[in-house]
Amino acid sequence: MIAHDGHADHVEQNRRYWDDEAAAWHEPLARDHWLQAEPSWGLWATPESEVSVLPDDIGGMRTIELGCGTAYVSAWLARAGAHPIGIDLSEKQLATARAMQAEFGIDFPLVLGKAEAVPYDDNTFDLAISEYGASLWCDPYQWIPEAARLLVPGGRLVFMRYSPLFALCVQPEGSASTTLSRPQFGLTRLDWGNHVQFILPHGEMLRLLRSSGFVVEDLIEVQAPRPTDRDYAEISADWAQQWPSEEIWKARLTG
Image (cartoon, rainbow, N blue to C red; front, side, top):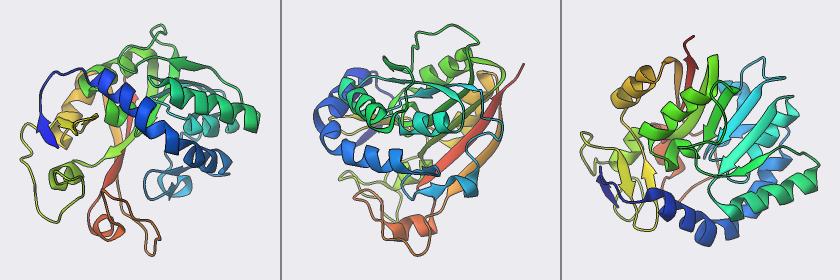
């Protein structure tokens, strides 16, 4: 993996990755998420009751899920009374989402497109949300201003991503070490060869959100629970019980 500020076409790389490599194994995971009565977030299935990702007044909100994948987050929003729309660049991911809609009887618009340029008017949505969608796979200097454009004044942005600490410690083979593997200065783009991810350090993310018109209301650094039967190739539960492997940002667009 290479960390740099290059300008290769990450959109096409990531489209191919999700269409050709990830979609085949994602449908069983999608069904598990669609079945959930309560939302749970990220690698460690952190319960909504612990982190309150969704606003209390979600009922009736117009929402956009940026990089929706199989759209289970939008399904959770629909069950809570919101009016969601999901957008994703992968046709195969959206095909799985449509299959889940038919299976579970939950219908909402699904749009093929990229979160950096959403085909909706300004001031259209009350909530923009991303769980490891645009928040990880899209250029933050494009998708965050785009989210601001889409939101009404006072609208909310919530997103979940890998933590900068994870990005600093992840090794070239893809697993997190207990030592730093790269410098923080210049950390933006992580190129894995067949796909690209983006992780800004906290200072840069704060400045970007503020320059886009957002006020940050919370930053939750997620700790893996004890005990847990989960482990991942890129991150072990033991690592994530000591350091945050992922984080949740909550922001509001100023009026």
